[in-house]
Structures are given as C-alpha cells and as structure tokens.
Image 1 (cartoon, rainbow, N blue to C red):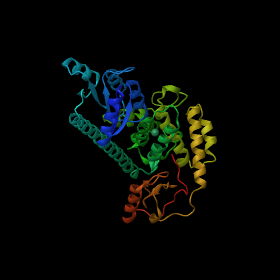
Image 2 (cartoon, rainbow, N blue to C red):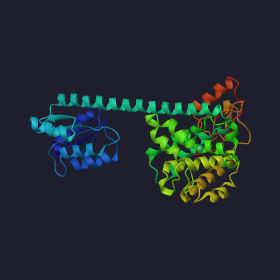
Image 3 (tube, helix red, strand yellow):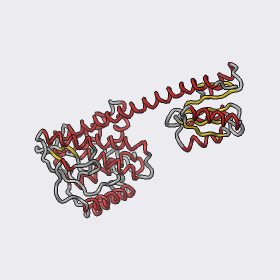
Image 4 (cartoon, rainbow, N blue to C red):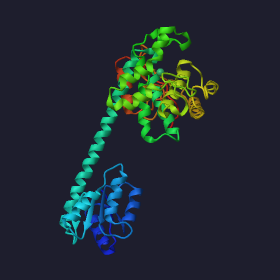
Length: 390
Ligand SMILES: [Fe+2]
C-alpha cells in the first residue's frame, strides 16, 4: 500500500516516514499540501496522511481538492491535527477526511488507524476486481449470443464479430474518441444488426437495389428494431442509441433519421465505417488493392473524409499483414497465443466458430480444440505469420 505523507515539520516527517517504512508501507513525502497534490498527479496512491496546518496548501484544502477531483481509485485520507474539538472533527470530515489522528501521535493508535485504511483500500481493490470479472463475463455472454445468432444465419456469418473488433480498432486510432468509448463501440459493433434476426435468408442475401417494396421496408427498419431490442436493458441503452444510427450517412441521406455530418454520433460513425468496410471485404469480396477506389467513392457521401482516411490506413495495414499470411494451414496443435486468424474458422456445416482477425488467447485455442474433439471443425487453421499490435 502506497502512502503520501505530508507535513511541513521536517523532523516529524522523517520520523513518521521511517516508522511507516518499518511497518512495510511504501512512502512518498511532501512538505506541504501543494507538493502532496503534485505527487498525486504522478502516480496512483491509496492513502494520504496529511498534517492540517501547512503553508501553501493546508490539509483541509488538500482534502477538498482530492474529493472534488474524483480519482479513479478511492483515496483514503487521514488528517493529523493539533486539536480534536468536535468542531475540528466535523470540519475535517466535511472536507472529505476519513479519519483523524491527534498530536502528539501515539504510534500504536496510528498503526491501528492505518490498518483500517488498508482494509478499505483492499475492499475497494477486491470490488474493482469483481466488477472487472462481471464486465468481462457480460461481454463474453454478448459474444456467445452473437455467435449463436450467426450460427443460425450464414449471411450474417462473422460480420458482427468482425465489425465489433474493427470498430474498436478505428476508435483507438481516432484522436477525438475517448478511451471510455472503446468498449461501447465494440459492443455496438457486436449488436448493431441484431434487428436483422428474423428476416428471411433470401432477403438478407439481396442487395438493396434488388429488394421489392416490402423487403425494402423490412430492411430499412432493422436499425430501429435493433434499438428496440436493446434499450430495454439499462446497461445497453447507450449501445441502443448507437445501433439506431449505424445506417446514417455523412450526406444526410441515410436512415432512419436522416442525420448528417457531426449530428451523427461519432460512435455510430465508427460502427458504420467498420460495417461498410467489412461488407466490401467479405460480402463484396473486394481485395485489399481495390478497396481504396471503393472507399474514395464513399467519401463525403456515406462516410466523412476523416473516417475514410482511417479505413485507408487500416486497409494498408491489413494488406501488409496479408503478405505475411501462411501458405499452408496449421494443425490446431501448432497454434500459439498471439497468432491471428487469417480466415474465419467454420463448422463443417458452414456456421462460423471464430472470425478472421481474432488474436488467439488460450481460451480461443481451447475452444477450437473443443470443436475439433466434437468433430465439428477440421484440423486446419490459417493464421498470419506475424502478429499485429492493434
Ligand atoms: Fe445494418
């Protein structure tokens, strides 16, 4: 557990630092609140032990600043005070302190109070770990659901899985997209076409120009159907908004709301760009060298110039990776973590098991081996020779 110790009294600071180190804590020292505040910006710290009266920034102001800022992790604050009147205690607690210790410091009491801090810090860490596990299993459940949907519908095969991955990659390359939006974009990519479920395979196989009146109507309403399905789940409400807008176009001639330019949420533009690229590659069977011509035709019409540039750069990376693709399929026994699938892995029935561009981890390899043991897939997988970083 890392502690910042702030005190303007050098002797007291050195004594407490030595004592905390002896008790096994990692300590950074500050001679006033301002210095402690700077230290907090440099690296995450779990506990701040601060003197109340200090020059530059006092302990009470430091408390308020910490609470107003809202760090990613909770910071437990112990204030050291020369007085312990009820008024002082109330003022300190209201400023955001968790605990008090009064001067002269009793070491046994100080140690016991730090143990309380450690319990709170450890509880928060355990809670965060649990939250990550729940979030991860939630996403895996969505993935499983999508795979199940795709195993019933060959036309959508792999599209949603590939779009989710590509949309995330585009988000990470877009300078105006915050890191917090990456998971949202990936989930929206996974579920954007959920409203297609139930449409006939014949309709799904047609181009829009080949659809008759009623078929057109059914197709045009799929983003709204996707939204209706998802918005009943509280956690998926932001995703529902994105999927509704995944067929809007930069020139305002998309559907269902005829949004244009910056009125289309950036997250939806990313899903749209990924979906268009995936359809060109996997449905239109356009090879990498021809993709730039197709994309340029969509510039300013379906997609903004900046998204076209992102797709062109991505396509260039894939083209380079394609040149490093293995010529001969590998046996599953030869697969290693980090390898990237160059082709979809499909069941003998044609249903997709794992989409191209999946970077393999041990769960993926175990899953493929499980399918092989059941006799559902062949013992042949094509991977890229080199791994990519994103
Ligand atoms: Fe769609």
